[in-house]
Image (tube, rainbow, N blue to C red; front, side, top):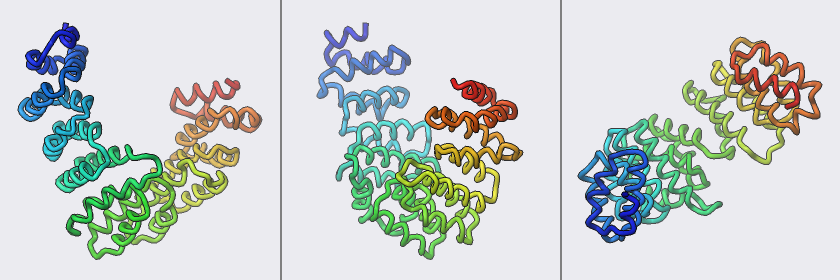
Length: 341
């Protein structure tokens, strides 16, 4: 019945459709579809009014605004997204991620929003929103350029709020700013700079992360940098796999706790070589690392190009995994791969 209104209805049906946005399920979906199909000049003012005045239907309203790519809603969504309640700001941020474009109009508004958020999840989610919007840029574009332009007008006292975002965006100019912040007299700025390096999207800063992991007098910084180093060096790259494995082996000498060692063994599954298998299998009898090793071994065994030509070496290892793993799914995979399936 609601969908029929798309063919015969006019702006007089908008109140009815807005009411149905709270129904849930297919009724809400139908109401959203019809609203999105009505004349934009009629429906957008009603949606913007409801966005502010009717919080109970806000998720449904935001869904329609996203479909319409309603730029007129950005300021209102920014204001809602600045509120501290996660149930409120998460809806608005979702709308901004769908509507905003990476341009000189929207990015400054999102940067201002970031600076208004409180430290923690709220700021992290706002930063993620900017990252998602910047990801709409063409491949190879400098994702940090527009953000840096907006930050040029921001007081230096706000530095710690935006450095972690610059780390996620990457780029030479962002890295230059982060490296400078590492020498700051402010402990809060230095911490933000380390977090920024740990957020880096590729292995370009791997050497710097390893330096921090080895030499920083701050135990927490060493821990963050080591885990970030493990993450970035095991991302897809042109580096020889033997070199990546050597990096992980060196990390195990630095790791001071079980979590870090488990991460290294887990990420070793991205190195698809028999040397990696041999190295991981060494940890099967380790009480702290054995279960992680089991998971990594079946991940390696998943790749037939590696497993099939080397079944004589894989077979006994998979047999052991099937005996000692405590995860039924891992046991089942080990048995199937052992049979060549």
